[in-house]
Length: 297
Image (tube, rainbow, N blue to C red; front, side):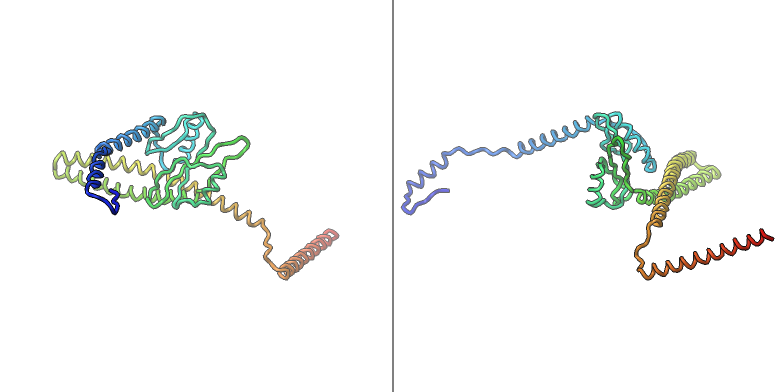
């Protein structure tokens, strides 16, 4: 931009242009260099992530969903050794080395994400969310792993999640049963096809293929059978716990006196009670007199 006055001349404009062109132009950084810098930054960020992963201790363990009490005990034992749970990916469990702590864990399944009041209550009780994994359905919130520290002279705290876990294992057992039925149909088809190949003197490769498919289906059938047995057992245990809790709640509610009745209703109940006790007393006196007369005779 040039500052132009009212009394400008051609010479002044030429001098301004010469002085403007004589100024050095700052060179901009090439686009390729910018991209290279961004790639270097991403590489450094990935290296940092890999460094964090390298600091973690990894163990491979295979657990079923129904064996979550074993997982809780396993994580507790590792914390007592100084390896604190961070996350898990399938069979891989990652831990961070630290000081041994008396941590205990609680695994819970939620269909809906807990609200803010629930999170505040858990935080007040000392619970800390350690890991979260997706549920069987994408719409469900999934499995939440909490951690708390055991203190001397205090009972371990619990998170009431038995009802949702019972619903999960009930549906999970139904899903395993349906899968086993489909695998059983596949096994039956392999047997029938193999017998037909033998009867009509078919190709040896076809018979071997039917035998291989039958073996694979049988292995899958046994795996889902084990999952079904474990999930049904866990569902029965959770159901019994819910029944015991419900019966205790009913017994506690019986001990609570109902104060919602009016004074007239209370007077009527009192009179009825007195009449009933009076009849019982008369019946008792008559029985005693009858026994005395029999003794005299």
